[in-house]
Structures are given as C-alpha cells and as structure tokens.
Length: 111
Image 1 (cartoon, rainbow, N blue to C red):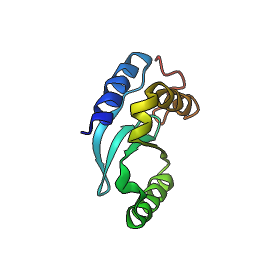
Image 2: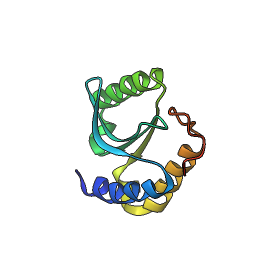
Image 3: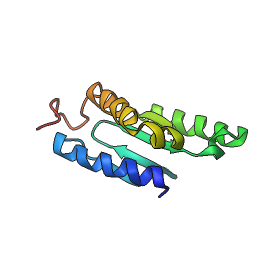
C-alpha cells in the first residue's frame, strides 16, 4: 500500500465501531478495489499521478461504469488530498455511507 492508503486504512478500520466494515485490496471481477464497504456498496479509490494519463483515465471510466452497473458508488480521491486533508476525505466517505442503504437489510449501521 502507498503511504496515503496506509493512512486512510487506519481511519477506515476505526469505522467498524460505527458498523461499517471496509476491506482493502479486495478482488472483484478482475479488478482490485482499494477499499470497499460491501454492505453499503461503496468503493473508495486513491489515485496517484498515473491516473491523469489518458489510457488510465479511460480504464478508470470503464471500471467505474462496471461497478456502477453492479450497484456500487465509487469515490475517487487523489493521494495528495489524503495527505493534505484526510479529515475532509473521511467526512466525504461518511456522508456517502449515510446515504447508501444496507444491502444486508440493516438500515441503522450500529446494528
């Protein structure tokens, strides 16, 4: 994992106390998801500079579309944003989680 991934992973693990369980580097249909909360169908991707290259941007668009068709919401953050504003990144993730229904039938994440 990159340094920003390590930092974010430490924060995401703490969300278990609130009922959100993330997995890291989870294989899914030929892709590896940086972080995923399967219960809420939320994927969090951290992107380095290579994601600004045209071929990688196209690959990411296709991948995100495949995930969206399967019911996932993909949040992408540049590594630099995690380095400079990890609290803002975590806030955006928590907001997305709050609006994503549980696929396992739990409406309250504390259950």
